[in-house]
Amino acid sequence: KAGVTQTPRYLIKTRGQQVTLSCSPISGHRSVSWYQQTPGQGLQFLFEYFSETQRNKGNFPGRFSGRQFSNSRSEMNVSTLELGDSALYLCASSLGQGNGKLFFGSGTQLSVL
Amino acid sequence: QKEVEQNSGPLSVPEGAIASLNCTYSDRGSQSFFWYRQYSGKSPELIMFIYSNGDKEDGRFTAQLNKASQYVSLLIRDSQPSDSATYLCAVTSGTDKLIFGTGTRLQVFP
Image 1 (cartoon, each protein chain N blue to C red):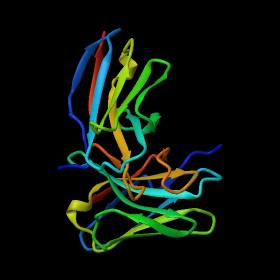
Image 2: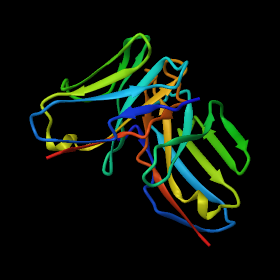
Image 3: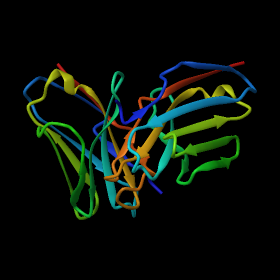
Image 4: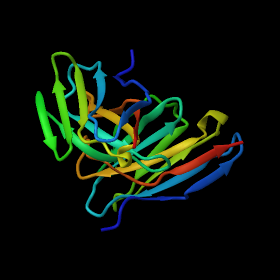
């Protein structure tokens, strides 16, 4: 069974640009969560999607948004990038909503210059 | 106060010893508790979960939960150098968000 797939693996952008990250969950998993990981703050919860609906949201500005498609694949978008958005963005899938048994992808390392 | 707190470490233990990792949480409504392990440069992976007060054992790992004290711990018996990693405590909040602590770095030396 294939694991969680995130693309791209690395991204370099400049301030003010926008970026879209993609996540394909494990087959059969309907919940997708997104986290931002930085050395200082650790793993910060961004949002969770289940059945194409955002079920939970963390304390991030509106520049961070996401969506989930009918095949459970998810995308995350960050608009008007800031230097502080440089981080590893991790996607995780699970069978159900609010299920803490997460399977993480390898992440997308975003660098904002 | 952070929602989930862990000592950042590093916690250094000799090979064969018991490593004890601790975590406290602030939301009394939390129901589910998890331990993830993250090797350097890798993604977190789930190693233990516990829902009820008391101990839960799985191989060399024991998770302990005390809801009255809002305290979760992970014991690793017979620690091996391959256990050297960052251990993340995670707690499901009252709104079902999974909130992570910043992790404790464990170093097991031969």
